[in-house]
Length: 243
Length: 243
Ligand SMILES: O=c1ccn([C@@H]2O[C@H](COP(=O)(O)OP(=O)(O)O)[C@@H](O)[C@H]2O)c(=O)[nH]1
Ligand SMILES: O=c1ccn([C@@H]2O[C@H](COP(=O)(O)OP(=O)(O)O)[C@@H](O)[C@H]2O)c(=O)[nH]1
Ligand SMILES: [Mn+2]
Ligand SMILES: [Mn+2]
Image 1 (spheres, chains in turn brown, yellow):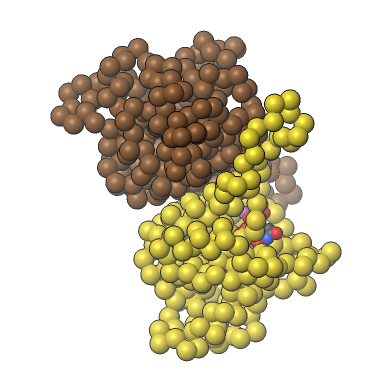
Image 2: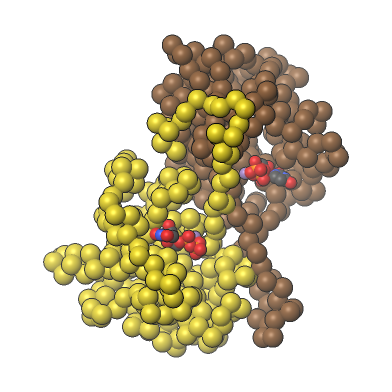
């Protein structure tokens, strides 16, 4: 299966983002969604959404305690998912699969999931609208990754977004120490996990030799809500309505 | 069928937004997507996306020439779609259906489409994250719409977002003059079209008497792209890559 690992946190557009993502995922065959809430306890909102989705899923939670020197999102959540996955695969009959780190507000074409089924060890592909570029992408010559088109921190060991690669799941059993870290600078999480599994030369370029965009690092605009108490005519309270 | 009418315009996140919307729509039974590009000519990007979607669709285009006094989006596009629809229904054997005006960056739960199949004339329901509120919604007493919870221009005849209603398709044949207009002030397009078909009292409250949110007025954040010419190390050109 494809194991999609998605950290998520409470905010006004959370249900909207998770709803459209879950609908896309319902079209992906043999998919297992690992959703990790950034919260002290699991919420009814996410629980019900997963239940109603008819997806195969695992629901986890762990609250981030951000360090001053590291404001990266999703570190503890993705690590919790990897820990769960290792335990699960150890006893699983079918240890085959692919691990993909999926943010809850990105846009995924169904095509990206077809690509990652071809992965041997680590597959890579372009990501649209990220790092100040139309597209960040591995540069490919004769079927090999020879460099990366990136302008934001191009000195990153692997200047790739989280949405631009997936990893053979079995490799996480071979490398029990592989995880994300709060000890690296901003933008280095992808490099941190990739270093356990691959080198630039070993990467498997997918999506037509990295010439096609099948995933976009979209962001949902933060809504601006009026302070109802400051209005002349206050509306009927709507706190009982789940949005 | 449900006729979804979607104006769309060229921008960096257009393909991402249309991709995730089209994937959602592929899960809706008996759906016909009318996509109208705001452009002088139809683009290959939208044409190929529609072709590959396996959706039933109609592809139109008309370029907006905004008047100073009216900056509303989608007026000419939605009118072009209504014109097309009238011509189509006139000769169609099955004139039944529902018309829904769908922006390309909103978020639609599959549940909203199930609701609108119950419509007799005009159905209404809440819309999340719009008009400065968590949720704009019709207020319902004893199964009747008695008012609206809205704080942005509450004096609108129907203070409802475009995503909050759908109309029996056959009614567009009965009212050949019904259309959107550049002569009304900002925020009045919904009222402009609704006035042909319904009164507050006649509206059919759906989504559990307007207590459930099945559609959100999300917006995709405008990406900030670096000016490549100002960089020390200019990347490889990527203009040949469709994003
Ligand atoms: O405090 C936070 C902020 C973000 N996230 C999640 O981490 C991922 C990446 O966050 P975001 O999309 O905000 O990052 P960006 O768009 O800036 O890359 C998303 O799945 C978020 O839901 C989280 O769990 N806790
Ligand atoms: O110049 C424009 C601006 C917008 N739109 C379309 O009109 C609808 C509403 O626009 P938008 O989502 O930008 O409006 P808002 O989010 O502000 O309501 C969307 O389907 C857009 O793609 C358009 O055709 N031409
Ligand atoms: Mn994001
Ligand atoms: Mn919009």
